[in-house]
Structure formats: C-alpha cells, structure tokens
Amino acid sequence: MKIIGIGLGLIGGSMLLSLRRFYENAEFLGIDSNDMHLQKAIQLKIIDHKAEDDDFMNANLVIISIPVDNAQNSIENCLEKVGEHTLVIDMGSTKQQLCEGLAKHPRRHQFLASHPIAGTEFSGPESAFETLFDHKTMIVCEIEKTDPKLQTLAMDCFQNMSMNIRFMHPKAHDVHMAYVSHLSHISSFMLGKTVIDKEDDERNIFDLAGSGFESTVRLAKSNPKTWVPIFKQNKTFVVEALSAYISNLEVFKTQLENENYDALFQSINKTNSLKDILDGIQ
Amino acid sequence: MKIIGIGLGLIGGSMLLSLRRFYENAEFLGIDSNDMHLQKAIQLKIIDHKAEDDDFMNANLVIISIPVDNAQNSIENCLEKVGEHTLVIDMGSTKQQLCEGLAKHPRRHQFLASHPIAGTEFSGPESAFETLFDHKTMIVCEIEKTDPKLQTLAMDCFQNMSMNIRFMHPKAHDVHMAYVSHLSHISSFMLGKTVIDKEDDERNIFDLAGSGFESTVRLAKSNPKTWVPIFKQNKTFVVEALSAYISNLEVFKTQLENENYDALFQSINKTNSLKDILDGIQ
Image (cartoon, rainbow over all chains, first blue to last red; front, side, top):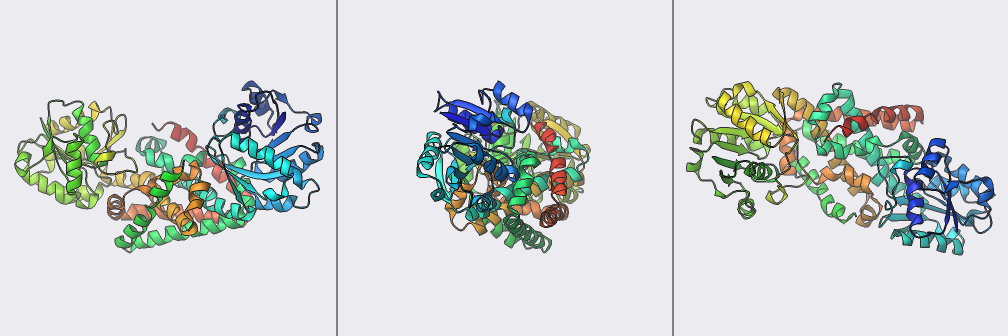
C-alpha cells in the first residue's frame, strides 16, 4: 500500500496520521508547496519522505488537501500521473465548481469528491493530529461517478476512522456549508475586526473579554489563505447566507432601537432551541 | 460572618460556593425569585437556608446577582433592611444606569458596583461552581463612593478568589462591554437564528455543523431573561457596537460581490492578530 498526501497541513497531515494507525505497513509519501511544511511533516513522521513524480504511477491513494482555488489543477495534474488503479480524493470545503470542472475528465472515475467536517482554527503540519476525524462526518459527493472498487477503498479508509459518511449533491453541500460553516467564519472575522477597530488599547481586550468573546472569535484566527478561496468558490451561497445574517442583525437592531423587548425575547427564546441541536453535535 | 445571596443562579451560586472556601465558619443564606432554584441551592449546599427579612440587619455581606432590570430595586430594598455595617455588592453586567440611579441614595456608601468577567452559557444553581471566578477579572466601578472599611471587605473577598481587580468608570464599563461581550451574544443569537431559519431539517445541523459552528453559536444558548434586560440597559452602546458590526459585514459582502479578494485577504489577515490577543486571555 502506498499513500501520497498533497498538502500536509492540518487536514492533510491529520488524514495521513489517522491512516497510519490502520495501514501500519503502508508507505506514506507527500508533497507540499511550502518546503518548510514538507520538512516538518517528515520530522513529525506524517510522511516517510517526499513523493517524486514516479511515485504516483503505483500509488494506491492520493489525498489532496490544499486551498480550494488550486484543487482542480492539482487533481488534473495527479490524474495524469497516476496508474489505472489509483484513487485520488479531494478534501476541500467547496464542491460544486470542482465537480463541474472535472465532470468530463477521462479519469473522472478515479476521483472522489469528499469533505470532512472537522478542523481547528490552526494550520500547518504542527497542528495535525491523528484523531481529528474520528467519529466526525465525511461528506461524499457524486459517489456514483467513482469506480466501485475505488469507492470501496475510500469507504474502508473513512470507516476505519469511525467517520459518519453522508452522501450529498455538490450544490446541496455548498449551500449547507455556506450557512453552517462559511458564515460562522465571516461572523467571527468581522466580530474580531469590530472589536479591534474599537479597542485600540489591547489591554482592554485582554482584561475585559471573557470566555464568551473568546469562543465567538475563535475562528477569527483562521488562515485567509484557506478561507478567501473558499469564499470565492462559494460566492453565490455565501452572499446569500451573509445577506440573511445581516438582515437578522438589522431586525434585531431595529427592535432594540424601538424598545420592542418582547420581540427580542421571542427571537432569542426561539434560537435557544439550538441547545438541543448542539447537544446532539459530537 | 453572615453572607446573603440574592439570586442563586450561575453567578450568585458560584460566588457563594467560591466564598465558602475562604469563610468556612460563615453562615450562608439566600433568596431567589424562583422557589425551585432556592430549594436546589439548599440541596446543593450553596446556602444553608433561606434568608428572612430579619437576617439582613446583622449580615456582613449581601451579594446581588439577578437580571439587571431588577437590580436597582433590589439594591434599594436591601439597603433599607441592612444594618449600618453591611456591604451590598451588585454583580450585574451593566453599570451606568445603576450607578446613576443610586448616586443620591443615603446609603450609597454601603454599596459597591462590580461585575465579574466570567460566566458560561448555562444558568440556574445547577450550573454554579466554586472556581468560576478564580483568576478572572473583576471590574469595580466608583470604588471611592464606598465606605473604606467595606471596600476592604470586598477586596478581601475578590483577592481570596485570586481575581484581577480593575477599576473603571461605569460609562467606560458599559461601552467596553457592548463590544467585547454584548455584541458577541447578539452575533451568536442571530447566527443561530439564520441557520435555524434555513435548515428546517434539523439533521443537517447535527450532521454538517462542525466544532467551528458550535463555538460561534455557543452563546446562542444563553438565557433571554438575563440578556434582554442587559441589551435594554445598555441600549445606546449596544446599538453603536451592532451598527459597527453590521457595517463591517456589509463591507465584507460588497468586497465579495465585487470579487475584491485582495481586500478580503487584507481584512482577515489584520483580524488574525487576535491570535496574539486571545492567547493572552486566560
């Protein structure tokens, strides 16, 4: 078994570390556009050594975990180099453009579009850990377009990590992600910006911000190299979600200005039902 | 030593549990507008028994931790019942209206306006725990208006809990809290609402929401009975903070619509400096 990771950051690194637990005798190779990350990944035993062009021909599995704006290019490049029995999996956070872009590729059947619902606000190989994906959801798009034998290899990998596999249409994936993931990041980035703009004295943020602020701006630490391409690729649905969010905030502001406290109470009370929903999220 | 708690929820309950560690021989009494909470507080040994009107006369300390819309009334009521050497402390999240309202009270010198920067999204006596305030910030307003001996009693209590005491003007307190606390709650409530409105199938939220969403909407579980009165009392500054936030979101949306990805990158990159700020928050 030979597994190659392209992109050895939080997602790619964790995926390889996770797989190492179940494929102990496999060879793990990798590539990263950042040479420091490549060296770090070797040092952290995420990979055994750098992958060379020749390695792709007899690889069983190539896992691509890079910013979404380079994903299609990288996948096409890979599909040209791999052998006939290699599976190429993408881990990116957007799926519609990618699936459309690859729809007519002659080796489409050797590709699987997937997206693990797991991450942290950190990035790079140092942030990778082997249990990141355990018991998390793995969204898989257009499974029917992937060769059945290669489907089985992918499902084996995901099931070894005890992931919950959920099959979705790429467009449905992107709409839902705009709301439950991409919007959270924007709300957090802009909350952080609003507070930084106001509090020019950093001491106020240190001293006065409690765990509530820390929790809501945690995602504001996320890397723009990852996130700007996601917002770009999912522009339509992100704008839709953001418009809905702004409109809810405007209603809240108007209710507060008009001292309509009953309406505020009802609105918050209804949102409290998230308690039950969130208690169900593992 | 006799200590009375008015309001035995997360804040009041935790304050009493915390003080019990340092005043082992003190008598702890309490009152709560919710009789179930009172019974629960006795059962959880937050208090020894219910406080009666007579108990106030020789109490050393009364700690008021109730929704901010009832705070002034409750404090005035207390100050009428207590003896000449009793200190009354308020723990509420807004300070300007309260301090103005009590400015001319004949027993103003027996009152201390304070606000601990600590909490969770939960409420009620069951959510209280003795270490909630350890090493957290305690904001104290208008300390000079409190009798020096009673100042000492308060400082002893807060220092026993290893709290970092910070003295602020009530108005400055309310401005800063609008940005670093109240705005976080609104952003979270409305993020939750936006997602619930969209995802009528709850399964999508369960399966598709990762830890990022969970973190940003954690505060959306907070109790409207606590929060609507805070927004009401701090209306001016909350509207100001909310307007700034909406305006930042509008700019982000316009930049995305106009495909000005460099501007998005710069904006997120600058906000990333929160990393350093947040790493400093304990």
